[in-house]
Each structure stands twice: as C-alpha cells, then as structure tokens.
Image (cartoon, rainbow, N blue to C red; front, side):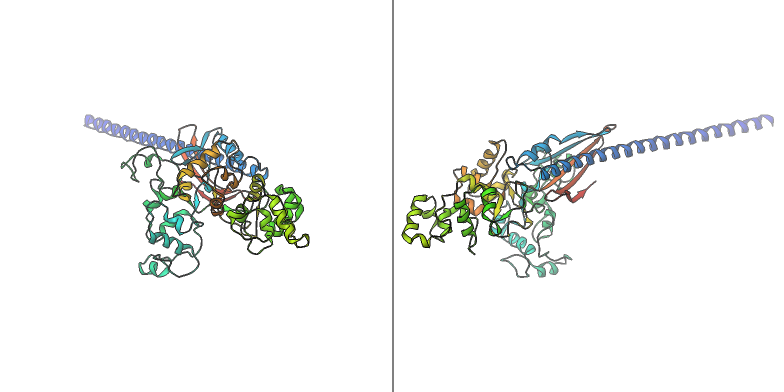
Length: 460
C-alpha cells in the first residue's frame, strides 16, 4: 500500500515537472517570438526613418535650388541630388534611385523626363508602341470637356453600357495609372513589368515567372507606357532664373533690354510686334525682328536672315515718317533668342500652371523618339548635345545647333519642350543597420513654390 502511494506521488511529480517544463518552454518560445517581433519592428522603424531621411534631404536640396537658382547651369540641382542619393542616419542608410531607359540612375526621377499625357495630341499618341486609333481617341475623349465622341473613341455611354460604374473624367488625367480606366487599355500595356509604378527594378520584376508579375528576367525594367508618360509634371510660370516668366505684352523697354539682353532698337521692335493680336513666339524663330515689327507677313523663307541694310533700304522707300518704331532693329542673335525663349512669353499661356513640358536635360530616349518618330537620330543628337556640356541645355534654342533641327521644326516643337523641371518623384529605400531590413517610400513633390509641396506619398 505504501509502495503504491509512493508510486503515485512519483508519477504526479513527474507530470508536474513535465507540465512545468512545457510551460517554461512555451514561455521561452513566446519570449523568443516577442523578441524577434520586437527586433523586426525596431528594424522596420529604423529603415522607415532612414528612407524618410532620404526624402527630407532631397526636398531640402530642391528647396535650396528653388531659392538660389543658377540660370547658367540647369544641371546643378540634379548633380546635388545625385550627391545626396546615398546617405545614412545613426541606425540606417538610404538609397535614392530611378531608372531612365532601363539604366539605374542616382537621385530622384524628374517627372519632366517623360511626356505629359495631358499635353499629347492624337498624332503623338499614335506614335506610342501598340497604340491603336480607338484607344488614342478614347484617351482624348477621357480628358476633353465635351460628351462628343472623338473618331472611334468612347464617351460616357460606352462606359455606362458596360457597367464600369464610372464615366470619363472630362478633365486632365490626375495620375498616369488613371489610363487603365480608359477603354481598351490594360494594366499590362501601361505598367509593363513595373507593376507597382515605382520606376525601379524590384526582385519580383526580374525573376521571369517565379513571382507576379511575369517578366523576361533580363535585368532591365520594361515599364510599358508608364516609362515615357506622366501626368504629374506641371509648368509653373517660373523660369530657369527663378523669376516669373515675362509676358512681353505687359513689359516695358527697360525690362526687355536688361533681362533679355536686347539693345534699345531691338526692344522697340519686339514691343511693336508683340502688340499685334496674331503675334506668336514661334514667329521669332522664322522671321527677322525688323520684318515682324513692320507687320510684314511674307514667307519666313524669304524674310529670315535678311540683313539690317536691306531693312534700312525698305524703310527709306516708305519715308522716315512712316517707319514703324524698331523696324531698323538688327536681327536677333542666337544668344538673345535663347534668352527670350528661356525667360519670356507672349500673353499668359506660358505663365499659367498647366501640364508639364518635356525637359530636354533629363528626357528619356524613348520620350524624345516619340517626338521625332520619323527621325530617331534626332533623339540621340539631343542626348549627345546635353552630355557634351557640363551645364546641359540652357534654352530650347540651343537645339538649332543640331543640323537636323531647323527653325521651322523647332517652332513646331516649342509647346512640347523646356529645359527645367519642377516635379520630382523620390524613391527612397531605407535599410536598417541592425538587420538589413528595407523599407521603400515614394514621394512626388513640386518645388515650383515654397515650401516644397508633396503631391503624393506612398509607404508599404
């Protein structure tokens, strides 16, 4: 009997020890898991703040250059952004990168390196790879303000009949991803391999069919249309000098001579011309200033490049009393033309905010080729021109140095291109020092006014 009791006690003790051991193990496991979660949470916080540090550093550089512009060096801001593309805090590092033509570059992405979808006409849209006429018309229908179907496009009735639950915006696209709502456009066509639209080649976008999305695994990012289109870029009315664009119709002679480098006679001629209701900036590229001031609308090929002596002869035939002020002005030099197109406009069209122009100093090769579909060599020449100068391209008039670009061609291109960019997308990846965990933050910012405005902010 005694032995039985002792055996029962032993069994109970063993079970108690086993239960206690199990409890201790469970507590240890829970503690280990909690410690692991704690370390991961801490690492995520460290990585996040490292990424935020990169965002703030880039914004500070953009703000400084907005306050201290260098009109002689459009590339100054980009070089400073490149120098700050890698940085560190006490507990982590950041890396800011973007892809241009499939190549990874340091620093934020200039949204003006892509063509703004809200500025493209039917002709430019049709130059996009795999673009069809019905889709091009549907894009125009989406953003125009009427309910009339363009060509074979799609207006409200088309979307309602298919139960989409939405209608065309009838206003500018707000984001490039909005194109996926347009009739006939699939996410694959817009995004390509860049499924998260971050402009960077992520591991899941370079592993063939192992993970979504399916890609070719060649180490390069095929971003589809999103690689050359944007809706974020904006014109601000600010120029390379940092001053508001000068409306020539409201300018005085003194301002024109000092800011644009014209002499008094040229300033008078320019003022006389811009008061004409049909005056355009393009005409300054096609005709000489004296002819424009005199109201001579003869063919540009006949008037361009005429000497000042021939103009004096014409003025003499009419008599000094009939001479238009400034009609004896000497032809504008290329440097003067460059300043005029860099700093001035006729009327308010170029001084009001609107869809951004393509920045010749950062434009992708694909975007440039879209503008010159019949002569892709021009895109390569533009890239060579900007790379040959440490300061980049300072005015669109500099394109006349390229043999294939005539004054007529540049005049047709004027409303599409510029040499500055105000909107940037910053893709900052923070890395925790302790574990190597990474967090990416994307911020699209506008530096056209201070403080710098954050247009979009995305965290995982």
